[in-house]
Length: 193
Ligand SMILES: [Zn+2]
Image 1 (cartoon, rainbow, N blue to C red):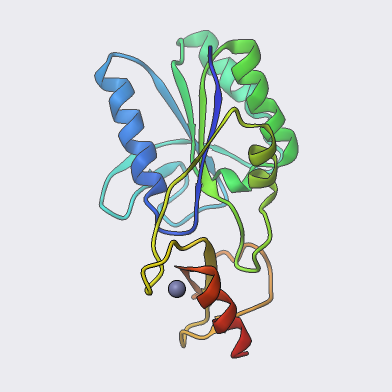
Image 2: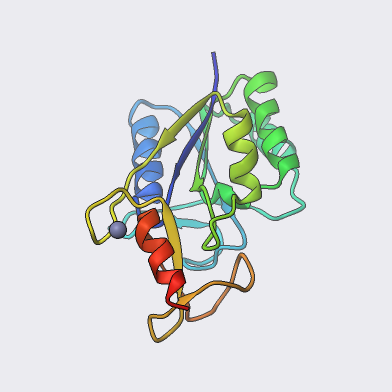
């Protein structure tokens, strides 16, 4: 039975690395994975998933209005797909998460989504909200704060390394950086403001 999986974490927990490893494992067994990522993420050029340890792979992209069921079923009819791997899945809309449940339930193809749970304000991303609600399996990928505790929050820092508490959920092309911290250090950084 195909299932919908959500691998979630804070920043820099190795989501893209895990996705690319999974794609490799499928290919090694002679199977065909289909990699999808958000067009919004231009860190590594449109249509690529790149990991911090140097692995990368070409990817199809989704935009806010893309019908991801259409996209997947079109490719699936030309070449049987064995799994769908979605990077940056926090950027999926509610509608697109629903379309991915149709990929699982109607096409019978497993879908593995990788993404952030919350933004730098501690709020759920839309994609994460519905994946948490509707996925069959939730898997947390862990990373650690500088203090050694599990990091479950993301801090946005300006170019001077100071925490930022407001602004757009997604800032493209800015000089801001994101770091993963535990809840205690997330709160203490924001309380300095
Ligand atoms: Zn900490």
